[in-house]
Length: 103
Image (cartoon, rainbow, N blue to C red):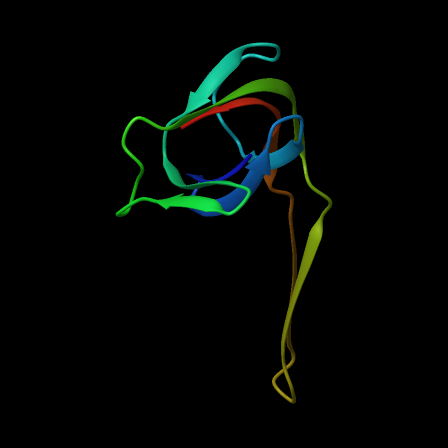
């Protein structure tokens, strides 16, 4: 069984037992959270699609860790204008383990 969930402005295809990194969620490490924005649930050949969300569907997940992704380097330059700008960015994330999918 798998589901497509929406969190942090992005969509993820998840199944029970998977680990995923999502945009930071304010929850303690070890706590269990419920993701209720489920767009689609599928099992074998049967697929349920929401319009836009599936009513009554939810995904339970456990927070494993919080962290920061690798640095993304940003470099801007205008040729012949003596303009250069260096910048870096590290995005925060929350690592989740998917426990169960309830359709």
